[in-house]
Amino acid sequence: MKIKLPLIFLFLSFTTLYSQVKVGDNPNLIDPSSLLELESNDRTLVLTRVTTTQMNNITPFNGAILYNTDENCVFQYNNNSWTSLCSGNDDQILTFNPTTNILSIENGNQVDLSSLISSGPQGPRGPTGAAGTNGTDGARGATGAAGTNGTDGARGATGAAGTNGIDGARGATGAAGTNGIDGARGATGAAGTNGIDGARGATGAAGTNGTDGARGATGAAGTNGTDGARGTTGAAGTNGTDGARGATGAAGTNGTDGADGARGATGAAGTNGTDGARGATGAAGTNGIDGARGATGAAGTNGTDGARGATGAAGTNGIDGARGATGAAGTNGTDGARGATGAAGTNGIDGARGA
Image 1 (tube, rainbow, N blue to C red):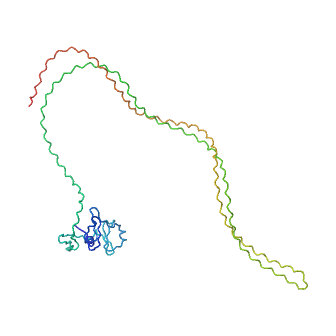
Image 2 (cartoon, one colour):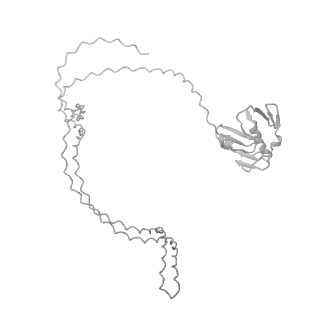
Image 3 (cartoon, one colour):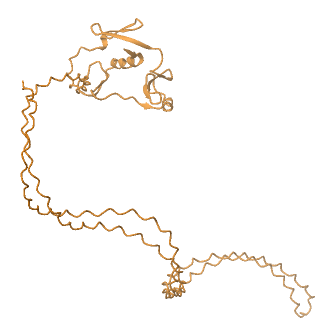
């Protein structure tokens, strides 16, 4: 039996710790030296299952194991890389001596497992396993030779044949029976094709449109736009020259008014007020009266008759009527005179006497 050593030593190393977990059957019965025990008659330990890509993205502690679904093999992580436990040349044959608790390896090395094996009380006996499948039935033996037939009993002598009675005269033929019931009527032939439909009359004029609904109220006026900036005031005109003061002369003429400044730009138009809600749509007008239906087009001409099909096979004959009752037997004719007795026949050869 060949066993992968790294996997064996991994599980053996679990027994050196003291925190204990029991999973499966008999959870309260665990060996004192076990760190983790799995016990079941119908369940197994399933390792983490990942693809090669997923496996290479995992960086665990050395000694971690998982199942690679691409390689269909268990892998171990050691020295910063994953190693397959299904390849390589590390297969060894192991031999265990239960008396000395010595595990011998094919290359000559030995491991004493005495310190790992507990002599604690024997656990309760597990449930009996399911019955094995029945073995294949053996080949059927050859059929024995047929037994010999028993001796046939002696056949009794054949009785003498009785003389045939004289045939009576044949009765008259009975009246003919009534005719049989007529057979079922054959299926009706397929209907002929319809003539071409006449042209459809013109569509009637469209009805008048319904009255429009009332117009909705006008929305509120929008706000006035901001006034544009006022233009600059024009320069003041020059004062007229003062006259010599003497008598107060007539009042001098007023100086010319300066020109008006340019008019400021018109302010931007104010935003439009929100439109008022649209009034409800008026009810639809009544449909106009349908125009008169156009006259039916003249019937199309019948198509030319196709060639007559071959005559169908003759229908099956109707069921024969019941056979009429046999006519009454005619009266027996008068027996003819008995002929003279013929000469006696020669005696037949006597048969062999039975045993």
